[in-house]
Length: 509
Image (cartoon, rainbow, N blue to C red):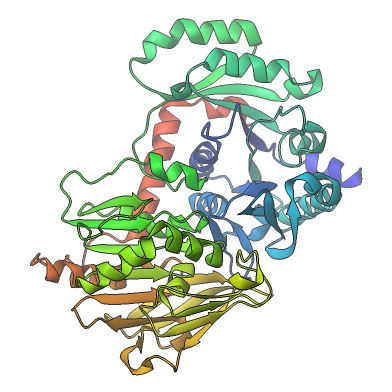
């Protein structure tokens, strides 16, 4: 009770709730974080529980959702796992890995999660809140909810919506997505399912992703305000800037950005894909067109293909084999194709995958030792504990430059001496972070454990210049704008768009 009293004396937290998943909570929090930073405040993002395989590793080696890391960047601060104290990483079949304060502490089924993990989860959320306020007594928390706050079958065990709002006595904003249709029913239905003391916390409503003439919604705005007695504090127009989707299912809905691409990139859409924010720097290259590959096909139309990270490498390797994509990738290599694997993608490009502890999607003993695609002379063994750490190294190929990123993987990879290890060379001075091989046909096969590798501008440009040279294209200008500067510019544009259409001052106190 004493802790709750102290929390209530702080600057009033702002909490963003949604009428559904995908309503725009993450971007709304990101925008508010930057708006408040620009106004001289000290915002800090927080999401008690997130479910995502798109992860980030903080400087203490703690795992957290990338969306909270992005929100921290919007605040101008380093991400910390305290900002996302519970991360659930889906493994399929209603099973998830449970991560508390950045550390993996168990596996759970959906059925048992609320029974076994609710009380420990609520404790770790309170510990994180207390720690954040102790370190930053003048901060204002900007809190993101999850899904809908009124899932009636789960609400008594909901860790990250109204329980947090009531605990902090936060000023809450309800965000709804008008693009989905049914916006009036979304708002009224959500509010009607709240208890009176919960509904009182809702201080404003945001209509998100509005297309067309705002004046046409003026009558709708008045109706909502008369019906709910809650002001509509913002009508946010449809925005075109690309941000990483929270859910891998949303990847297929992303529209290509490049109007006149010079390089076509194919990314394999693995069933257990993880860390797809690795490709944001490529999404923001005007010369690149990206397509997601979901089934067997001739890959020759792509200038290079990428095997992304995987939450369950064995499971995804079996998918590649069954779908025919493993053979497609081998054929692509024979035709001078350039191939790039990241983390699980690196592992699958090797010769063998051994999973003695059934950590990477093996279901039977026969799946504990399977062949990889076989394009790199590497073998990987998965152990019980994963590696999570920030990386600072120096590259040897395709240029010498300083490299930053992070590792987040199970498994140790080493040269397969049964093959011809002399064909393969290290990419970095830290020799176990990645390898490359020039194929006999003229292409390159590259694999690295470093997530965020394409955020390193000089390295990315030099790799893309290898591809461009094969297409007789001029090299990229080395002085092109840094991706991190581009990312910050996108956040700034997002904040400006929200600021023009949002009355944020009405809910600050």
